[in-house]
View 1 (cartoon, helix red, strand yellow):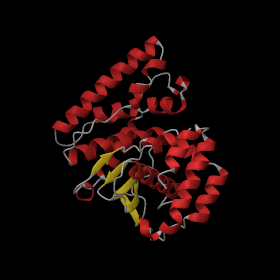
View 2 (tube, helix red, strand yellow):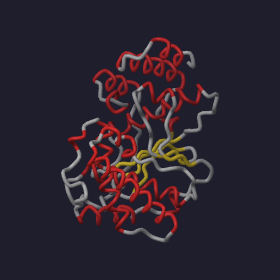
View 3 (cartoon, rainbow, N blue to C red):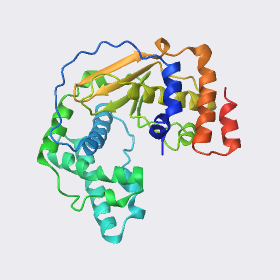
Length: 284
């Protein structure tokens, strides 16, 4: 279980609804790319990887792009392990080639679609989620992934100062049994969604607020200034980044109390040791 599981709890949902009003966002854009197949989960994961590659290249970053497949090798049988290791090697090579050339090639897109299956194994711990022929990729998904990539506009994604790929939140991530956001770009935390759902739903909104809380905890823990002032969702099938100011949705006078409730609730939800929870509570 992770932050997503915690936010899906009935009491947590209600508490978020009572505490944080949805921002008023005018989003009436037409969808630009309908899904080419029903492989929604794999497409979402593959685009996340592709987006990270794109941001790294555009901003000349040295960040290492971790593949979840590297974390599941140990639970695979010998044949699966050999196949996984080969796929990891080929994917890394294709990424390196992408960083050194202009444009993008289909080899990288195919490899990202293939290796994305291991992310599901990582999340669930269930090897049976691997398809019998992991090398088989739907051509329509490859075309769809390339079109999603082509919707990205360089001028929107050039970072001025801060650019963090898949930021984690230290002990705050451990509090919810794992949480990593997609991107922090300057003062904005951004989540990537490859869905036909327009705008920011209540579910997406709660996730952004959840990340903001985790970031606040780790900032206080490390005596850092909380640098996040905006939250946003990049709606990949619309080619639109939708964002809002944190100050417009969070009442600072009540926020610390909510964070304490959040920590205590997560402590019970995940059965964390009392001293761990007490340490996090001490920052508020």
